[in-house]
Image (tube, rainbow over all chains, first blue to last red; front, top):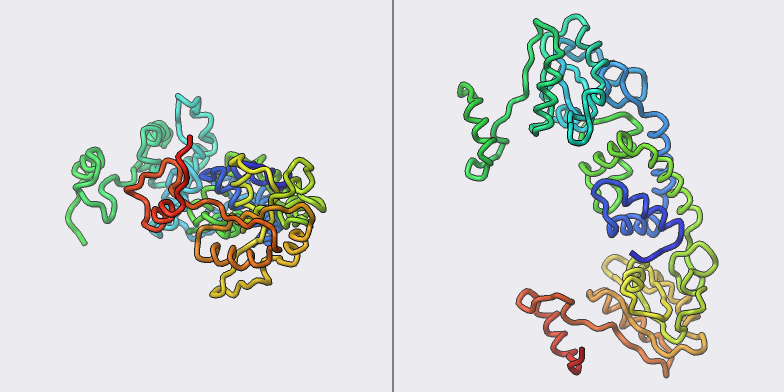
Length: 200
Length: 200
């Protein structure tokens, strides 16, 4: 990609390091900012600096937050008997978005991946063990990804859950709107294995 | 999309206003920055602020630059007899990238679009007329987009070129690697009309 001005080139080079942004879209974004959305530039600069300064991890559930505790741990209206374990804040947001869950979370910030050198140390398990000791916990729900790494992580972490606490996994089956004809064999196999009583 | 922290939400909201970035990718970018590329955040903030401060328009060709003149007008190694008229800095960069042009440019920063209320006033034509008066100019090459607006803009602006200066348009035809079977009729029609002597 040919050169613009030095500071334009610098913006383009940094934008290219963001996920899903290639050279063309980095240039398009930078020029769009400079030519049409100039007022957005100092706003975005300030927002990035502010988030960099203030976003940290919740000292209880490891989710992103700006205070000692995140808004979920702080809410007082969540069911503390339910703990859902997810790999990332994006997964937590997706479950929140579904409006189907009233319990609390723990965010591992990753998954086991021996080939990439990611072992148990990366998963903040000491913080999780503290949470697992809190009184009143009744069920730990694993909502790690349905991938090799996600499953292995769930298996490994499940071993830390104290006796007497129910351990579950979110259901695997055919997605809503999914057509059987086009589903992969393993999803369909799981869906048949995990069949439940018919209810609407 | 559910909420993260306030300053994370602000970054996501601003990112969504950039071209080609939807709600999912805005969230993905913001989380990627916070979780994996934290050092990039102040760098990007500073780069945006710096570009916002220093990028302006070349007083001769209207391209983006950081001094009185852009690097092309300033170079001394470009053919001042050739002037290529483009709609945007991205178009200029694309032509530079092709390595096929040694002349100078004028950047209109738009095209005529009466339906959107964009008239000749938006095209910096006073600056262009100054450039057209410079001695030694031999050819004005129109490289506006091959759209209705681009063609109309070229036609309108061509009327400003003084007598005795050659006025040309970049070739329209089949793109490199293009298969005739899949080309639209108007491109193919243009290509037949504009046929040239066989040479390799």
